[in-house]
Length: 145
Image 1 (cartoon, rainbow, N blue to C red):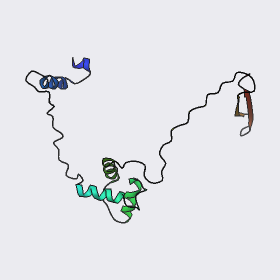
Image 2 (cartoon, rainbow, N blue to C red; image 1 turned 180 degrees about the horizontal axis):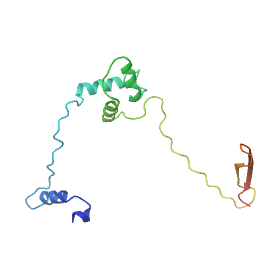
Image 3 (cartoon, rainbow, N blue to C red; image 1 turned 45 degrees about the vertical axis):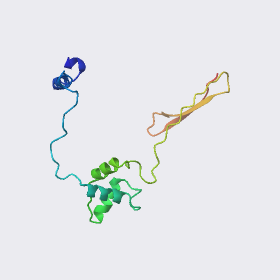
Image 4 (cartoon, rainbow, N blue to C red; image 1 turned 90 degrees about the vertical axis):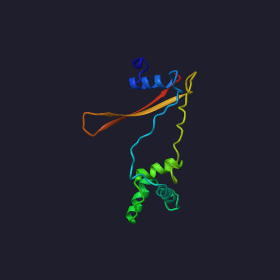
């Protein structure tokens, strides 16, 4: 059954126990038990957030903020920590004058029902037998003919 569902056998066994007649269907798994000693505290997170929102750094990404602070002899957190804190507070977007990504324009679709309505052109470089010398082929095509 586990292979049919593409899940692990222990997952299937846990589901059966959870949804059996005596189970209530509640997932009782706990999170990770390991304690990370160097995890940022709330005060450190607030300091990163306040630093990123200062007028001097408001237009800079963390990849530029951290080196500037390092030049001044300050270390608040790593670049990745800055990104993590900004993401947690909904500020991990383009900062400053950077333009947001543009939606690509639709490719124009042209229809020709007769001659002289739609023209197309191309320039192609053609090599010759002499190295470094090229011929230029300018081509104009009437798409309606």
